[in-house]
Length: 63
Image (cartoon, rainbow, N blue to C red; front, side, top):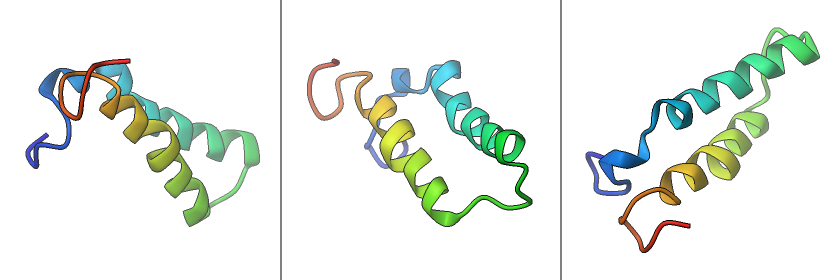
């Protein structure tokens, strides 16, 4: 938001908590001590950023 990439209303508490919940799910379901970088990248690029960019007027209309 500070860089103008997302509108303030984009960071709804559910959206903000989504990446942490997905990361926690990776630890619990896979029982791994670490999550691969590729999974972290997917969580951010494929889930979190589309959620943020899809909410609010920055970059066009909301979906």
